[in-house]
Length: 227
Image (cartoon, rainbow, N blue to C red; front, side, top):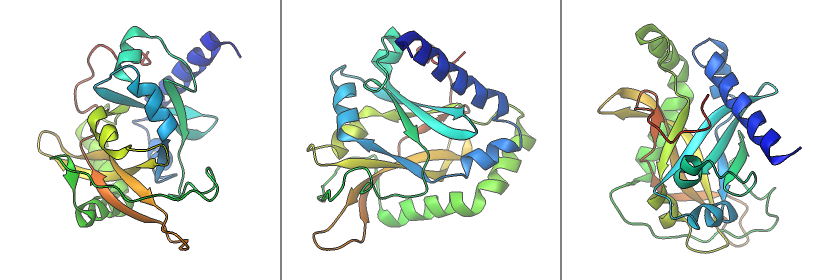
């Protein structure tokens, strides 16, 4: 498939989500997984463009929810390279990336900054989504028939903090946050996966939470994968 055809297909999938996002079937898509991994290689491609924001579009491809991630500079210039600056992510229920990178050891990292939240708070918001997604969805439909999000934006500085070596993988996990401006809505909490030596238990620490769902936050110019 040519590059142009790939972009056309991606836009079609994103538009398919737009067509169903305010219907009851959308909740099935939103609860079909828990999140997706972001590899260091993905980060490197975006970093080369000196972006300020990462755009995470929602799309439907053959009855599966997928995520299309692109940095804001590429999106503005529409200079997409599928597999590099425009990356497709599968919605998964598993938070381990060992199937992707066999025998990968994940080292703990130290983060600092106002975007960081505690592990307890992150776990509470993730649990809020798992237990409260249906109630939230019904509430959104009652409030506004076109309120369900089309994409989420993520400050790129959060990724800068997470990726400090080529051995790391970040995770974006679905959660439910009470935004002061718009009330409860979907968010992506970013975290880092740690695989301790000789221990198959996957640990998580250092959580970032400054993602914004759009809508209800404003969709301005520069989101060029929307039709």
